[in-house]
Image 1: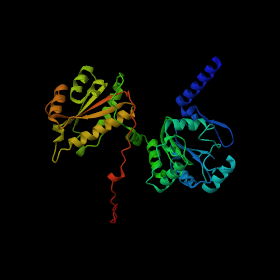
Image 2: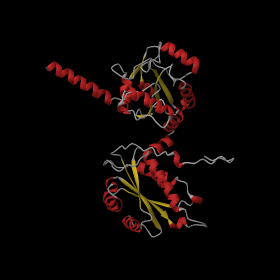
Image 3: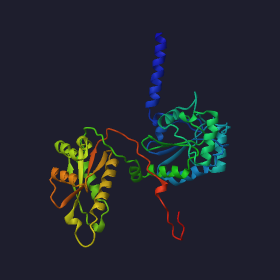
Image 4: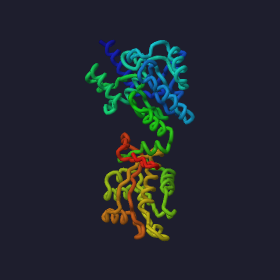
Length: 376
């Protein structure tokens, strides 16, 4: 009985170890059979794919190689793991597979030894990947996606409830810090994958696309250096006629933050820093023409939000203008003169939550008007 309990505890520890490990703790075998630690790829953006040489998706090798050639110099790597579990469409040795891929697609990205991605003998790499990003379904509005869904559902009516790899050329995108960003099914378009790769490689795009509103914070204060960086980011925003019609109030006093929370909610009471973004009417009305202080200060607000995310902070903006009661409350609280009008208050702090950013891309909200009369 004691021996059985020991075995059970070891098994539980093993499972917990797999679920808690980093991708960089995992070792794989290269095509020559040598062990390679994935820690060698720290700091790189990775696309990990299970492949086959006799599959209907095999032509994706050409698209993958084009993607690799385009972004390799920016720190992008494709890690190829041939797998013979789906229709036995990856026969032969790894050397024969590599020869086929080199001859037909001239692949330059690393190709590793054959592995299994599902079942009792699945490689720890895929145990980890699947634990991070499960199956989210095929696009059944797509012809190929519907075919795959129909085929797999005939084999298993509940196939979509499992995290298993469904077929050849499933892909996982891994960020520079090692976290698994996204899983792609073989029917997903390479153009969509490229957009995500470009985002991960570009720090500005990455900040834009991964920023999300944070409303819960730790007790850790925001450093003076970070506060200045946030304010500098705000003042670097575009501004009409270079009027720079903004004024910022940085609030760190806990009593004052609690007071401000009376106008815009609990996150201001919890945060370590609030920045009140205001319009300076003396500057806004300089010269001739319309005053664009609202647009200018909105641009400054977005800069501060993105800078907070880039610094590892969390932030959320709360509206003040044009609601008279909120404007009066905030103006009185931080003692603004009459010529300074509050636009919004940004709550900022070290995050105590990590919500998943929402994908807000909606093609129906875009139209393309091309010169020459063609409109889509």
